[in-house]
Image (tube, rainbow over all chains, first blue to last red; front, side, top):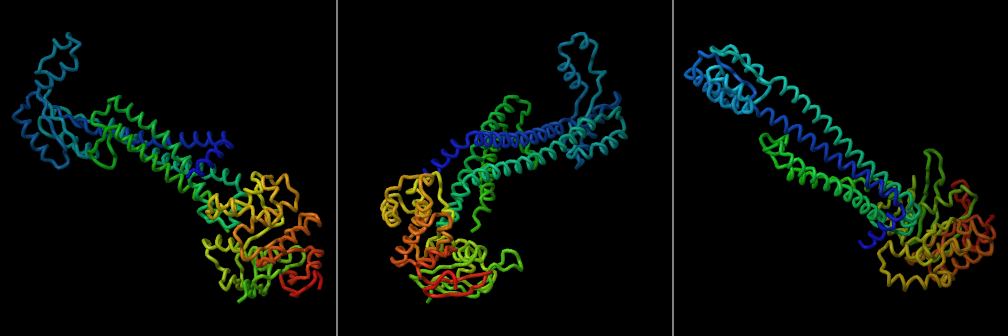
Length: 295
Length: 228
């Protein structure tokens, strides 16, 4: 191992500019990789939060009393397509209205519970059912109006899907970029020592003797770059946590209902980047040296 | 048992064009053999096949009774520790001293520094380079460079030393010095195979001469001359 450090020191000294540019290029690639994963997760989380809001609000006519609304609430609640249903009475509506408009006393003076409609707030298990449910509720007796946030939700859903697809493509692209950066960086290094490698093989060096220093070098370059990017990603996690917009944490797309603290998520992401750094360094250098091991 | 056996060996780099065509010969332990012939006759191909750098298209090559025609990749380094090789262009590392150039051969097999310190002075003394051990290749003459290459090839105490046009880039006086060292090494029991087209050297030594032309052996004479 000390020989490895000695070789590395010599290489860094000899190829200062190239080493710095390789570190920067790989570091930025890993950082962008981490940021895009974060962007994908944040957009998925935002969608979850949006889906979690009341999606359909059924407003009732004034003459449709609580005695009729509550049995209807029970009926809706029993529907397998519905996740939850909440009754908002006229008084509750007034309280909410007052809360929202507490800074406008003039407006509040003219409002009483009697002019606000009672309502039911319905959350569907699947936002794909919103249209169907809305139509069903519209035809119910005593219903004044049915509102649902179809446009907002579906628009955000398609944006989020686009972010997911673009993010995925970018993540794969960045992996490929990192891979080729490692290969080309090592190929340059190997080419510079081509004669030495040829002589080593002629005098009986084993594959591992020729290959290992380059493998160490590739893994070292890649992991140091990944470590630097990981540090920034952890700080980004702290930033998202302090931002405080996601009270429950970040949603992990493939585990429904699972939320995780942004710092923990980004720390895990940092470890994934480190692992990626190791794997990319390992396989990249293995590929780079392969053709030089032909006897 | 012969030390080296070439049994109807053919080699094609491009399909249909035979560089070697059914070549057969044996070399016994301790022999000094010249392989002669014009450029492109196939001399260097024989060297490459012997050290496992190339595989024969047809036929079989045996070393110490074992086939090396299809030697597994991982066994090639071991073969190269038994067959030392010297090339026309020396293949020295310009950034390393004479001592370090020879040490490379020992370092790659994991010999520790203390052992290397004990081994190298003996080898450098054998090739007459004791005083030049701290010189860089750029400070040496062609003959001296070739002697460094020989010293490196001897580091593993190989059974066979193969010299491929070893005197091709050096003046006649230096060539004589190199051949003298090869004879000395041969007298110590190492088999020496020298591929060359240096008529003067071949004729002066009166050793076994295998002549190869257009990929075929045209003569194989004990105490032979360059021209048949």
